[in-house]
Image 1 (cartoon, rainbow over the protein chains, first blue to last red):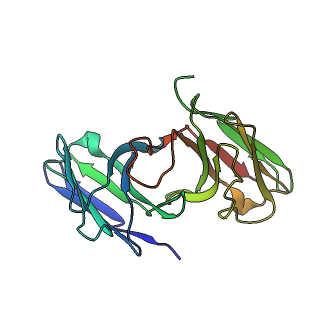
Image 2 (cartoon, each protein chain N blue to C red):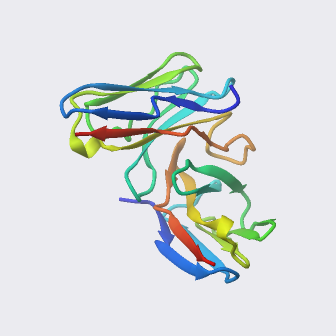
Amino acid sequence: GQQVMQIPQYQHVQEGEDFTTYCNSSTTLSNIQWYKQRPGGHPVFLIQLVKSGEVKKQKRLTFQFGEAKKNSSLHITATQTTDVGTYFCAGPIYGNKLVFGAGTILRVKS
Amino acid sequence: GAGVSQSPSNKVTEKGKDVELRCDPISGHTALYWYRQRLGQGLEFLIYFQGNSAPDKSGLPSDRFSAERTGESVSTLTIQRTQQEDSAVYLCASSLGFVTGSSPYNEQFFGPGTRLTVL
């Protein structure tokens, strides 16, 4: 079964509202990566988190890695239409196999 | 090249035919991955190559699927006797290093994908 769970599956927000997607793993991860896929595009790497409790920011995006290194979140402050896309988390589950979550589709209404 | 390239970008085939998809990774990237993405769904791991090590084929859905890579260069994914359920976008990604650990070289660079339609 799927070892990396992501919620919500889909979120539709008004432009300017905040957005958060959550990622949970069944096992402790050595790192977690986040990718963004625009509609019709391919996944593009956003960030990698490595340390327990780590928090990283990229402009309006805030990424967190849980203390137990089993969960992570991505928070977008004041969404813009350019934020539209699917956000995936991914973690190495078995050896060098990167397992992706199912993704959270973000739609922004202007 | 500047990024990962894949060919063809689109492939329409008839059920039962064989298809071959190609991936050119970023020069110097030792790791290469193939994923399958069905419409509106996440990425399904298929196979992983790392240098000259034996590939991790654990994600291949059936023996109709196979992949090869010559050294640290081009890879081809072959699907024999295609079925309609094989219709999907096949994505290739490469990275400098392993995905585990804290290395800064874990980032995967994805190609644009090959959209396969089996009629």
